[in-house]
Length: 466
Image (cartoon, rainbow, N blue to C red; front, side, top):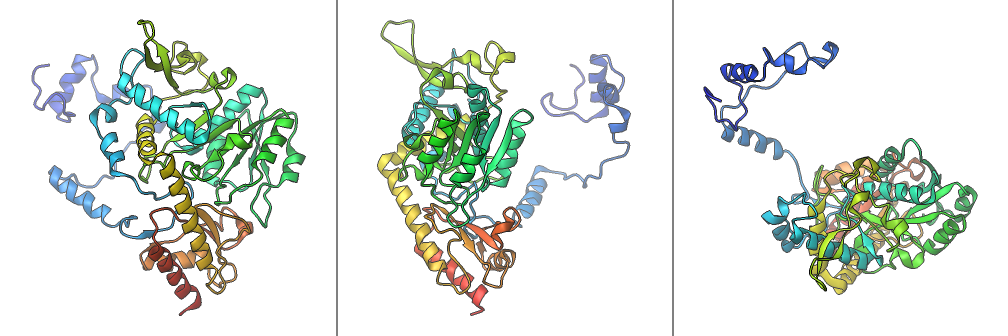
């Protein structure tokens, strides 16, 4: 178009330019672009926006000043977890996932992008080895979506519309699962043993029925408890014709028994512990895994990459498996579920992490986390009025610290810790009121003995007034 005062690829707000563009498409005003919007929804006054900055430099300085008000985990010592934990990210993970051929190749079709296909195949293979399953998907948006999708898969496979889930579950994850399963799948909560935190097997037996599609449980649980009755839970599910779905923390699987060995049919979890930085509003991914059986494979809504023969006899390449079952396959309306752009980049990152760590590295990771968390619990027990673990059971990475007899609320303790440069544990008093004043603390491989000792000493001063 002639007469442009600004560059054609920069948004134009010049009135003369706007009018020329409107004439080109046969309109007289910008309002005509939105005739379909009801008048009751249109803003009739100017938005209360701050004065515009005159340069990019001024805008950058302004945003930097705002960001400096935040205190990150680089500034403060962090013991928060509850679904997003601070792990060490090897430099090679960032190096690989920032390469242009991966960073910009978020899409791709069956006829191109074979390098990315191979990278995702390798990722799927390593996660499959970690969880002792055959088939793994291209990542979901996060762990909760993976849990919700696994439940819907189980419902489609069994044709049933009821799912049993643990009462002691991350409330945000519960809401995501509930939203994802609405309106046709009902969720029934199973109680937990108040002393150990294990799933209550008698309550499970009383609530499972012929209508149950799946029993979903986590190991470790949301509060870090290692569930020793996985085989019994799976057996109860199978006897009722239901599927056993287990949510896991992949950082535990170099140490703990993989779920299929205690009866899991579908395994799911969050990939964030595998080389992915904590990010507010991003940097999350989830996975699902099953046996290589058609009834399971055909219910995956997201992409699966496998080995496929090429036009050259004896030669194989990497390609989509059963592509038509996806919502972006040839029959979109027949897709198992709608799937948009997924977190493939984080799958590649997790693959790099697993390749870097190897089986020995993953075992050492799990051992280190378990040892650190047990040390923290023991030291917490030395504080008057504080119990290092609310539950009488073994915990991995996360554990519930009991402040009920300390004379302090979790809110008060966390406020004091924040003043001392420490992010305390997640306050559970709202989500799990029966626990009273308890907090969920998280310890990973990044925490040193000095870090844990500092936390314990600070809490001791806050509680005992020393």
